[in-house]
Length: 170
Image 1 (cartoon, one colour):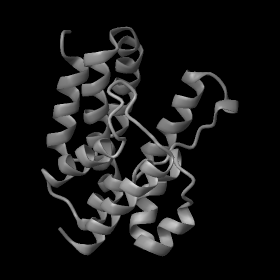
Image 2: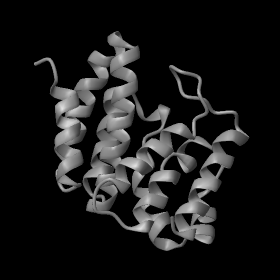
Image 3: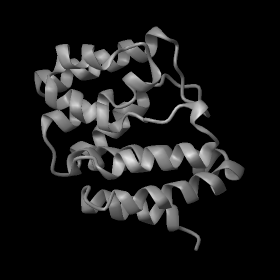
């Protein structure tokens, strides 16, 4: 593990723990999610910056950490990846469909390496939701099908795996 990746791992654990963040369905420490995302990214062709961004992908969105701090601690490339992974929509933008459209437009413009990280994020989240929340799964599944249409430039292995998850049972 490179210093960059190890520093991102430590930072992500601390940032999510500092706000007491837990996984929605299991109530396990939230850092298990970025750990799973990072492991998926490491399973395909990757760079240390991609793995660091996998660890940090929810930090700006979910905690009090600013993007400027990510730039300072992890450099411009990792910060750019994290920024591209951070949702643009806000609750005041409208209903869930409107917010999803805003976030899809943002991700459509993302670097292919960022799309690989997002595919890993989708895969890990899909496992949890499909298994634990069948009602929400119906809505989430359609949203993820739309998301996959803008992630085609991400890693092909992860893209196929995500497709298998969201199209299973059809």
